[in-house]
Image (cartoon, rainbow, N blue to C red; front, side, top):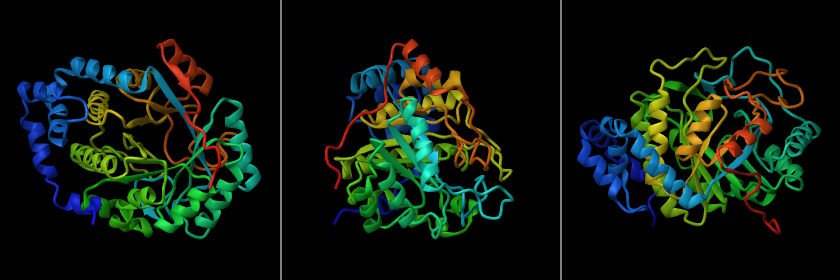
Length: 375
């Protein structure tokens, strides 16, 4: 029987890899860079995240750019988030949707959901990520299935970033038109996870950790993972865990596209602010290291980051990006009528982002596939 990632992680020496990153020198970095693409392991990733590698960031950037271009061409895939609801029964102390916060709550009706989708379709988007808070009654499987069946006939690519479900429930959502599932573990450190997740179903660390595997067994075409970098200190521990998780999913669900997101924790309505934020240079190095470890993985960068920095990351290895995003329910048609989940820092329109991408010599991809006949 195939082991779960939970079994792998329980025996995984994260601290040893972080120590290796701290002790790596030029020879370790050169050894990692010299390896054939697809043959690097987490030890190589740790070397590429070292201070010695940081001093050679230009060389890492060049290698990452060349590998990305070889695997993906000079293309950037565009998507947009649609927040269906900010109702939530979970208490995550860093989140703007957390239960108990005195914020304006809103759940979109079917017509409002269609209006949001039509707005984005008119601006070129063909890939939409649906998001909700964690409310089993108001935004459960029945709610999501209804919204997917409503939107699937008009939106070619639909994915979800919501509370996690069992395998049969993911099969229901797949049959309703869901192409992909994104699950941030937030942090892979159990103690830190318990510190920030105080109540609600999300408090169950293992149930969340194994969600991508349940989604993969249910036949989801895309599986996305990530951690909120900076939530746990040192953040490199979470980066190493994401690397190990992505390698596991790549080998186990080889029919699915694996994507990784590298969001930095941001201030929110909860009042949370990171004590030791990840720097721009550190995040750029992480993009390069992840690309060199995972040649075929999609690397996703959201509108959390500022415009010029996001543009620079595209040259390093980012392949998927959002544009013109709103992080509150109904935000495209009626902005600011509800609380947003986090601060959006790239305020450019989709047209402006697309133009910037083309100016860098890249093609903008709005739709990358079509399913002739949905189940």
